[in-house]
Image 1 (spheres, rainbow, N blue to C red):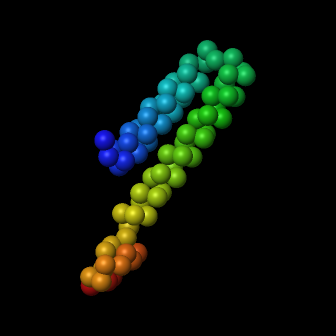
Image 2: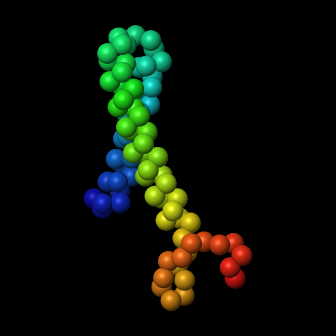
Length: 78
């Protein structure tokens, strides 16, 4: 299995875990101590996913120039 596939699965796993935590918290059947712990875990997962998406966005917004260098994408460049 390539490392790229593994990273995508990890991101997807984090999203699924985050969704499960949100469902549990929305159910209202979680005691306060558990809710605080789950909320903290959810915020950590949300940040990790956000950071991953931001990094991917930065990569996508770069172009490969003719000399092989990466540069920021600018629509006005021709």
